Length: 253
Image (cartoon, rainbow, N blue to C red; front, side):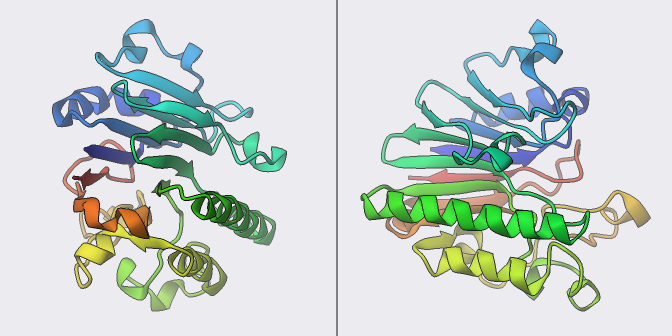
C-alpha cells in the first residue's frame, strides 16, 4: 500500500505545475494534500477529475487559506473532518479516514510564525490531536498521522538549527510536542528506517534555498507502534518541484 503526502501551497497553482500527472504516475492508494487554499467549486471539472480516485475535501472557511484534501482509490471511509473543536475546525486542517487495519489523519498543522498567539494555537492543536489519538489507541486502533507538521523535530532535521532556535518551527516547546507523540505510541517512520539520513521536505522561496538545499524536514508519517512492522519504505521526493514542499511516500506491506 502506498500513501503520499504533499503540501501543495495552493492546489490550483500546483495543478498548473504538473500535480495531477505526477500523482497519477505514482499510482498511490491514498494521496493527502495540505494547504490547498481553495474550495472544490473553485476548480474546473477537469481540475477536479482524478481518474480512479474519490476526493474528500475540507477547505477552510476563510477563502484562499489552509485546507486539506484526501484522494483515495476506493479503499477509504471518511471518519471525521476536523478535531471536534470549532477554533481548529474552521481552518480546515484535518481529514480522518478509515482504511483496512488503520485510521489515517491527513493534517495541515498550524504555522506559528505570525506571533505568540499563533504559537499557542499551534501547541493547543497538538494537544487536542494527541488527546484524541490516545483515546483511539486505547480502543485498539492503529493510526497513521501524515501531513505538514510545521515543526522540525531534531537538529538534523533542518540545515541551520543554531540560527533557528528562536524561530517558530524549531522552538523547544514545538519540538517537545512532536516528542510527546513519540512517547505516546507513535514512531517517525522515516527516522525509524533512516536514523542518520539528512533530507529535507521544505525550502523557503527566498535566497535560492532549494537550489542550495537549505531546508527543513517538516512533513512526516507518524505510525502507531503496532504498524511499524508493516513499514517498508519512506521516500522523500526532493527532486519533485511545484511547491515549496516536496511529496513524501509511505510504503506499507
